[in-house]
Image (tube, rainbow, N blue to C red; front, side, top):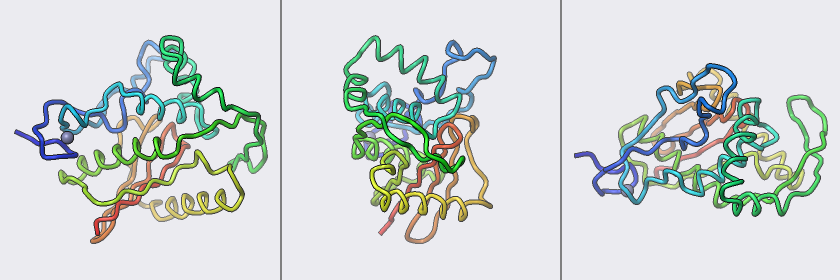
Length: 221
Ligand SMILES: [Zn+2]
């Protein structure tokens, strides 16, 4: 009997890390690509398996619509997100009702572009990503991670220039640090990650839809 990656209860299901909804279904692709090959799963109890949860869907909304999204991410927005918004409009209404035109700085092109700013429920996103990080840690080490998890995302970096600079420099430093590390994940166009572990801390760099980078710091003390 194996136990849950989050608690000591018996594991009765497998949880996907990151959530399965991030990975496009074949029916939503015009190509013959399969982005659901060899997805990462960890043993989970009923309570901690968030399959089909609203939080996972909210993460998908933000990742797919993000200014740093890719063609595959946008495709996922135009198919899966659109379909689920038509079925259950609540979440999309919540996201869209706060949308305002905004100037968005494109770090790759080094210029400002017209975009749409949306209200981001940062604590909610951080909770979902922290759980994903704990699952990936379990996948890597076969150990549960019970310490503190800190998540640094690019979603709120346009709020003010000071915060913006802090976030982008943290992400850039992490990329430099991880440059020589291999990345893991069978579908890197959708998701891959890098991992390193020291005595007191572990660190992960998550890549969603190639160019949305999220830094995770795991503190074991
Ligand atoms: Zn559990």
